[in-house]
Length: 384
Image 1 (cartoon, rainbow, N blue to C red):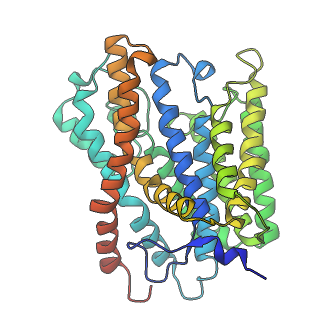
Image 2 (image 1 turned 45 degrees about the vertical axis):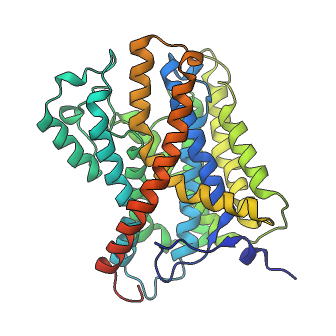
């Protein structure tokens, strides 16, 4: 009998740790699909007046999918290593994996900042010293308080907005290292249920009718972002513990199409019935996304095209997520300054998506992988 668990994994990248376990290649591919939907979701922010009329309306749910994937992968990679691995070793590994692209995103955001001027944010009033301070705190993943929020729209990380989810990702890893990993499977299941109830309550009865929160230091954003992390990351960890593969054909295509469709669904219920959209968000995060991760981990690619596609999408997914948003600011400013329709800006939109993917690949090969190799040699002991 074929072991689907082993055949569903791919070889690791050249920048991986020496003892890194093989990847689930379909999950890598799904992460890439989700990253591309995030880019498309952000493109349409230039034409939306609120969450209600945003196209690719539920693209923000990709972050919850990322959190579930992260929990699953962290549990799979590290749950059985704690007899020989310290908390310090674990945090070094996560720093090496995550932080180089945090720094790169901040640098790109700083380089692009003065080209992004529009009515929504007057970049000409920001001094160079203020920009340098903002770059430093963003690179260190320190949220910008109002006095340091140089764009003026309330983001934690005004040079590269998506860094907010990495801030929560680090919190998730710290919680795992010091607390969650020590829970029994039953206790972890209780945590997942409680966090799911909290997320559903916020989503359905909260102020927005959605969970597109976490990017600001306001109370609602901190609460919503914390619930998004705790529910999804813990669910991924639980899934890694109870996972037993099932036979699935076409798991990548099923999962990829599902992510695209779920992201593109228009706003449900409008402004009069916010709870309906909140219910949709809760169902996606609590039920559908864990199912997709389970199917993706169970499936296997059976041809060179899908295998190579999954590897490529997995390789560029994190760099793409971390480098695209400074160009979204630029695109937004261009659209607003020129008063363009989406059709008029379509060549620019296509160039942004394609260019962001190319830049992500270049950052991966010329910066991220070499830096991770260097940090691994410097920070980790041999065999660790």
